[in-house]
Amino acid sequence: MALTEQYFDNGDIHPIDVVENLANFHEWEFDRIADDQIAMQVEGLWRTYSITLAWSAYDQTLRLICSFEMEPPEHRVPHLYEALSRANDQCWAGNFTWWGEQQLMVYRYGLVLTGDQIASPEQIDTIIGSAVVNSERFYPAFQLVTWAERTPKEAMDIAMSEAYGTA
Image 1 (cartoon, one colour):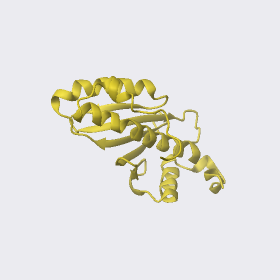
Image 2: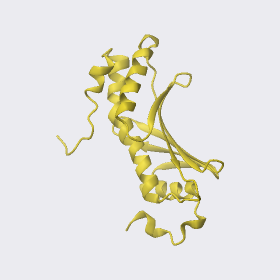
Image 3: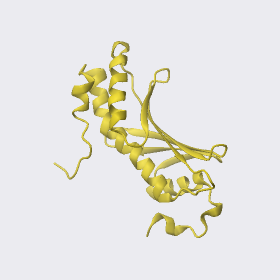
Image 4: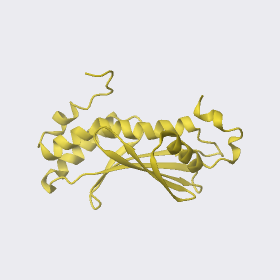
């Protein structure tokens, strides 16, 4: 059964309601912060990622923020910025940014739904999945740059485009 099949009339469904149903479906821990915002925890291989989705009726955009803590040594932050630039060159949708004050690595994505479009559960599931996949893909590279003092180019060489199968 497709995730969409549980809805009959999408016209009255709020995007955050769809996210809440997906969180229940995947059995993710979540907190409905407000009518227009939800936060959840999604377990990856490297970390547990904090994911927040917020709906802005003003510009009709569903915003996703996927974050994880990092505490790079101050002298490695310029190298981290270069690694971020290299990672963003490999991301087709969404991008990474470093929030230094909060010590958070953040992956951001905005799904624009102007003209009263409706986000399908499959679309939302895909953007959440993409955030986790990209975070998992680049996390080791960011760690190599900050803690193993590898160059950003060396670190990005380990960020495979996609892994298939198991070893």
